[in-house]
Amino acid sequence: MNLSWWRVGGAVFGAIGLALLPYVLPQFWIFFVAQIMVWIILAQSFNLLFGYTGLLSLGQSAYFTLGAYGLALLLRHAELGLPLLLIGGVLAGLIGAAIIGYLAVRVQGHGFIIVTAVPTVLLILLGQDQSWLTGGDNGINLTPPKLFGLYSFFKPLTSYYVVLPFFLLMMIFIAWLIRTPLGQAFRLVRENEERASILGYNVLRLKYIAFVIAGGIAGLAGALDALITAYVVPNSASWTISADAIIWTLVGGAGTLLGPIVGTALLLLLREFLSDIWAYGYPLLLGITLLLIVRFAPNGIIGELKSWTSS
Amino acid sequence: MDQFLKTHQLSKYFGGVTAVNQLDFTVAQNEIRAVIGPNGAGKTTLLRLIIGELTPSTGKITFNGQRIDGLPSHKIARMGMAKAFQIPQIFPNLSVYDNLWAAAQNGETKLWAGRAWRKQMHERVETVLGQIGLIESAHVEAGDLAHGDQKRLEIGLALGNVPKLLLLDEPTAGLSQNETDAIMQLIESLRGQVTVIMVEHDMRVVMGLADTITVLHFGELLAQGTPDEIRADPNVREVYLSRAS
Image (cartoon, rainbow over all chains, first blue to last red; front, side, top):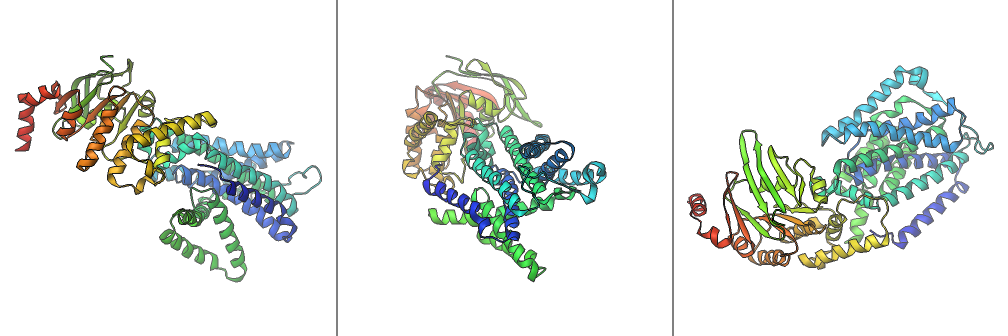
């Protein structure tokens, strides 16, 4: 698989566009786009597992929440700079996924979905029970440190320009990962486990590596979310948050880098536009969109565009 | 090496059924061995035991001087063994080229692929594409290939990591006369470079290719010898004739 010039060009063009976007957007939309970028990172975490490795996980919200609390607790109890706070979030996601993944990848088929879903429930119960640490149902309001001692996170512009480089870094990381021999081997697990293992691939190990990396990516999304919303709550582990990421990914196109970006942006914009004018509009339209996608475009928007242009 | 692959008192039970029974089976390096026998003789089970898809109930397997029974199949594969399944086990949504690349990569999962390594992989893929005659279809999605071409790709996948021992489970099943001839030529071209153990029903293929034929019956060794010896063996005739009637 080659990185063709138009792809690199498109990515650079998109990155410059994103960097300049706040100059033309009103305050509200600046924050909104920052949030979309965070959710895209979560969707990519699911995409790495399902789209590339073929593992349907309902549990990415758990590592998202671990990442958020990783950052929140470090912020509360230690005087750390922004990079260390975010690394703490990523580590929390990685460690959580390393523990759950050890069990999950040893279970086949539907069992895998259940083993990934259970920790989301456990995490919420644990969070509610240990409210001295987690704030319980009320969560914790955070006061993020000012960036370089100057820029407050309560300003959308700060949030935007903090999220943007991590967003770009993560997209580059995934684009790189899926082109390495390791990333290429992930696809073989999705395509045919039996064949992959007879060709010398340790399928269990590949699944585990993908699971742990995806946990770290979800952890970063959670940490960034905690930073820009200045708020963490155990309920963000709910499997419905995972389901959102799944839907965004499927609509955009699983197994492609662009799919989760397009799907997440499109559906969040749709929700935002509809929320003021028609209360039930979004869930209704979302349901209909999903039906149409599954029936007529099972590979998602980007997947269908790809097969359309290549034939 | 006379005992390139060796099984010692190898048995496999599925519940109460004995698929392979106390089998001593030896294959020399670079020979082409055919394993034949009526349905249920334990031929496919034997191949699955050798490459570690199944764990033996009792007995030992040595490959190239090393014990391999009980090892997972990915480890055995990396020691230089490959298998082509009877029903093609391909990567349906990847191109033929990417399928063969996956085989050439041979279980490697590093994070850095240098130019030299990529070139080496590319050359291996090109070689196998030529061997199996699918150069024209290199960029076709494997799932879109016709059955005959999928069987070729299946053998290509087994050749991709340059194995020392190649297991073929009915390589010509479901193929036309012409396609069968092409597969026979391909196997013939490997003679002297790779050790081949093939399970096959088509006697024309077996008699045309095998140096030695092993006949299994109810998981036990019924007869073993050159094609001429096997053809003349009264026990073998008995088993095949009684089945045909």
